[in-house]
Image 1 (cartoon, helix red, strand yellow):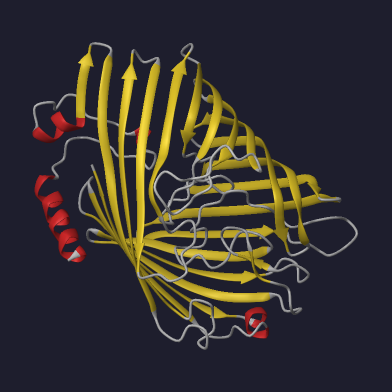
Image 2: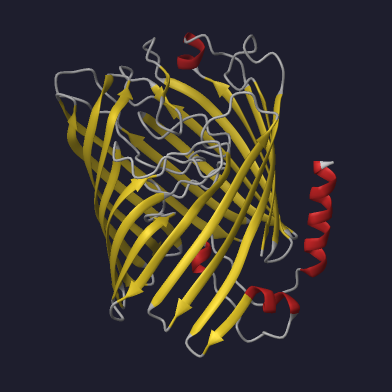
Length: 441
């Protein structure tokens, strides 16, 4: 019955979905709305002109996913049957704008899941306020934002909205931003919202975990941009392979991205310092990504080195990726960006109206004295042996965008355990597949 309802909604969406010139963004407060085609039925529902200086718009999305695993924990004795579950996410928002000075944005979210036994916080939240903020522009250059918001800094390596999982990451914050021509400087203080499964029951303004930031983006030219930033995160009772203690750390980062002789690049270096209990923190990561267009498609290469603890007297060396995207290495999301070295070539090309991306990732532990963490940076596989190689991962994504409103995607990944997992008693090949369809309006 639920599947039939989904088909009805899907077919109805295809019927009314016509090109209206609207551009939907990942963060829906940044949508570009066509205000000229106001006579269409859809546009009358979408956009209301309240006065010469005020407007109110509405929108939302529905995302359906069917996801399945074989040997999700690399152990067929534990994973006796294939696990398949179904995820549904509904989002609805309204956006009030007055005189190009004031904005009020509100967004509700309902994330549901069926048939999964071990539900984690990113799987289910029956009903919550995903975003609710007011923004006021004091001048053409300065604006102040207060409220709840999804945020992405830079390319999302350290702070992202967590779009892959069913429940997005959101922060309660105060943010001040300066923008002029090619310069944007952002500063904020925030507290992440802790998800619960029920209706309007999320734990908020719990300062056991906080994030502050000063972020500067400079657009030097069309081919050359930089981000320079300082982030400060506090987290009580954080657990690493080295133990559990209060973690307070600064992250100083530099990102350089753009194009050079037809090659797109996106490179980033981050150094972290602070304290973990009685230990000093000294951790770092270096990320490199290059890609180039060819007549037969796009060839790209990503590689990263992410420090892990060396179990020495120098303190803690485990890198904290803060709030990275949940699908950091694909929707399969087995390994998190801490204590890793990875090499990730990929090939992206079009087949008619379809887009196909093929990739391969090889994973090693940066330090054999540190364990392996999941995407939430929770210790998943402790350091029980001295092996360094983790796994080979092969994946593919086939996507088709019907129009601005509807998109389909099929992703599959296979992970072949390496010596570290095998020595940990986890030697069975993992298979993963997920089908996604999303309707935006």
